[in-house]
Image: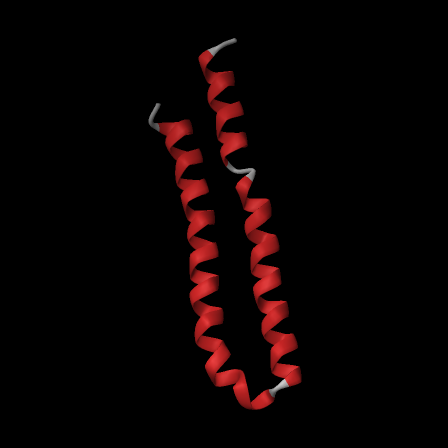
Length: 75
């Protein structure tokens, strides 16, 4: 196998995690909407944890993208 083909395959495998990130972000915001519909008074308390969870899930996406770009352009 050529080196360039291996780099492309490796970058593609590194980005597979983005599918889970999309599902995670959808789950976070759907849970926020459901909890807000059940108890509108608690939205202020739940919203902080929603944004923290969103940031952590989004960090996984950035790490996956970073690894893919490192594989493509550095190695």
